[in-house]
Image (tube, one colour):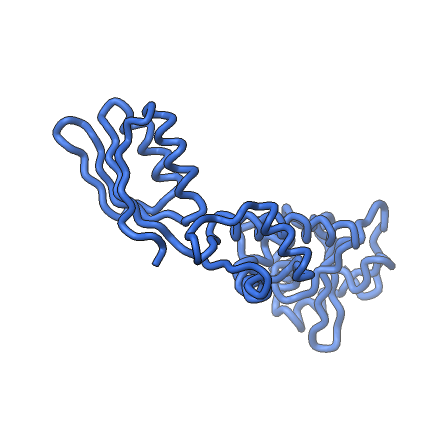
Length: 241
């Protein structure tokens, strides 16, 4: 690879990652979904992210970075090693359409988190999803396509509480499931809650103390009662206080 060498620009996507370092600009052409996942800390093969296994000085012009610059800035001549650094430290330059797609996906995930975990502190009952959606619109909530979801949830809750009384609460439950339904129900309980204590009784029944987001508690109990034909005993050990 020599300085100033060009690369065929056929069908090069505008979804690129750019890093400016040591007075040099480095760009890579990426699969946007995978690049965002790696930037968020997920274990993704860099080779799968790159649309072309090349480091560019300018993607749009097809101008490749030089081996000298790679070695100088990244202390490596490996394309994959340099690309990993570029993705983690650089700015993802995405098309407007893709940015909108990311925002819509994160909006749905954030609303689901608030719906599942959030309750009205006056009644300890979950807010309907439509009520949360309306509060989002009224509060003019903006979703950042790159910011960590957990951090965004905390910031959004502060704005929502001006409009909607809401708190994140867990419910602790004691459940007793007869032997005939215990194996099937166990999988559902484990999937939706945190099992704090459990005991298999001599008669094959299962007793457990669990903690579950308040917004999921009613769904869990409905599922257990449906699977056991109502033959599940439950006791609320707290009410999110």
